[in-house]
Image (tube, rainbow, N blue to C red; front, side, top):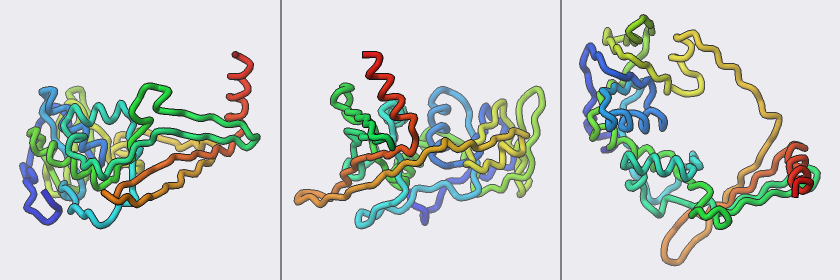
Length: 238
């Protein structure tokens, strides 16, 4: 399904389901089919149409995710991981961390008995893998939709839309981003707190004779004495 294809959006004026997920980003797209597979009725609402982006093998998306082995296992359980083209995946097999005071930490997937510490996945490739599972699992997709009001009572929550639609559920999930409208409407306060550290993550792209692939080496340089203290503590404990 592409962004230009006719998308099966649910235009039902009123829905009463077990769970309403507000926001069809990566979290909403993954959670919706997982809950539906567990036997719950689910509605997924978003301001934009929910559709897979056009595939383009000639370019690369600069927006990427580092997917942990546990997250990859979850994505596999809902059928999305298997849909990712192998040529669009890159395994992070090692990590090298340097502190300002000269201390060094190294992590190796080999030492941990894992295939990779993480997998680098393009945002558009992951979205393209998730969207079919949403429609295939029977999720009610309500999009595009503008959220207007949110209210709660003893039975659950009610999300009213600008076009007059009403979505009611025992659980409302705020998956609409870092500046969540749902979170604010529910009266929840989130105060960002800086870590007091900085890190760099350079990427290296290598050409191959047989195929074009991303090769990623993750290098994090922490701007904090915390890493040096950690290394010293490890040495003392040996």
